[in-house]
Amino acid sequence: MNITVYCGSSMGSDPEYKVAAERLGKWIAEKGHTLVYGGGNVGLMGIIADTVLQNGGRVIGIIPEFLLHCEQGHEGLHSLEVVDSMSVRKKRMIELGDAFVAMPGGIGTLEEITEVLTLRRLRQTEKRAFLYNINEYYEPLRHTFQQMVDKEFLPQEEMELFEFVGNVEELDRALSE
Image: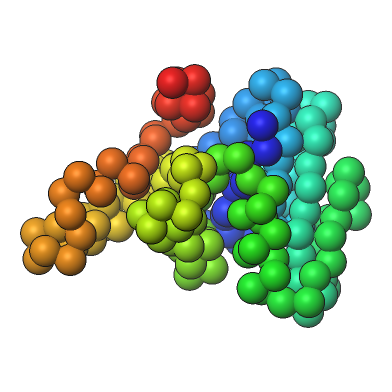
């Protein structure tokens, strides 16, 4: 299975984010999955890619040419696709992914996972998308989704599209269902 992981190009303020990226990377490798990610060698992106590689896993990176230097395109991957734009990157990561995980990250991470959630909501994909809720990072977003329901912009039954997991074990159980 190709697991597309969206995450920050920085480490964030909580040391647990790095630990969680290492656990996720190790799980991906041990399960024989392939990591698909943004192709960078910095921040949580670099940590997860390095961890998958160190544990014998396969890694595919997708990076726009203009980010090749600032996100330091990872040179040790099985495949690093250099694309023309962020739009092409997102499309390619969705095409390659069988499941999607958003770790803590910034606006880019949020945009990427939101696109997958929108595709699920519009029934353009059945691929599952998970918000990796490390130390309740995504709780404000969960509350925002609930407000969308409360204000009648989102049907209650569609809340199930937004899958929150707190650790690798929960992700593993969910993907085994």
